[in-house]
Figure 1 (spheres, rainbow, N blue to C red):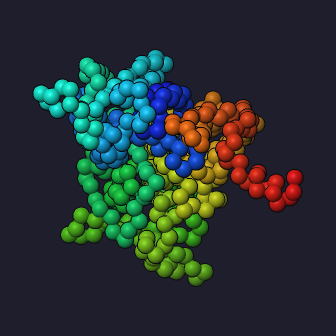
Figure 2: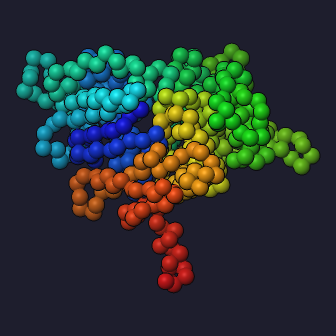
Figure 3: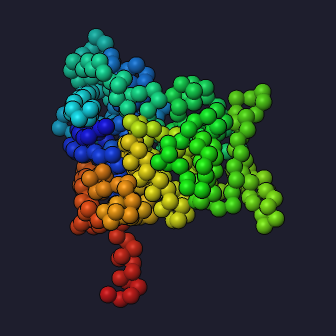
Length: 388
């Protein structure tokens, strides 16, 4: 498990330290630097996958994230040209630190000439040699999942044997979800902790149907490969009062249903020791569905998956706080306040770098003195309405 992330001179983050827990939540106003925290992990991951991290440096544009050039990656008011990422990782109760330092690349034979428009960063000094990176969940072939905020909604979806079979990956946009379900839907066994109470079948597809039916009542889903093509189809059925199903294409259903399918698939197919990163899990989802989703995420954390979430939703936050409260009362045994880190990121007016504030959560799930702007708009609006 990643226990700490330290970042220097990356995008809007001048120098930050973030202590990590099994569940990590990043919130804050738009453009404050929340994504930069996640991008640090994604850059390391995609550079490792490209074979670049072990020999050359940081690969800025790839399958997981596109940063641009070195100029885009470097904090614009940096005192030096070094970007540094540090990870503290707990392995069997032993903490180990991994450090990578990068600088603007130099042209071969022209050591004094810098070119900040390169789409990679060379190491600032000696290349670190870590022989055990393949053992870390962040760099594992089948232990890391990432879904960004821009999830694909289409009538037909691409297939990828490499991503689905060898990486157990859905694609950063969820574009391989249909292929994943077609391949694993009736063979992958969902952990009992994640199983829906109304469905006894332990396989991925029936469990997905059960959770989807709770979040989006009356909707059924089918997956079919398209013969002679490298595509798969998702189709939805709307259940009528007579029991008949009306066939509906994803583009005619509404984004929320397809968005939630990729998230549910990622959660239900995760295992202990994995890492799952989701940006804006609340996108296009009704508040009730967001609350259900957040409680399912708590189960996933209990299972032993480390989760990182970027969110603007108080429903996601409150659902998690309810789980902490219920655990404190002995009504369930999922999440305690020791299992969660919550951060509020802001860039003060006139400031040049982002500030990362840790938000304290009490043992009964209450927020203790959260910073101004931390999911307090409802309270502010209510005061205006009732006049106090």
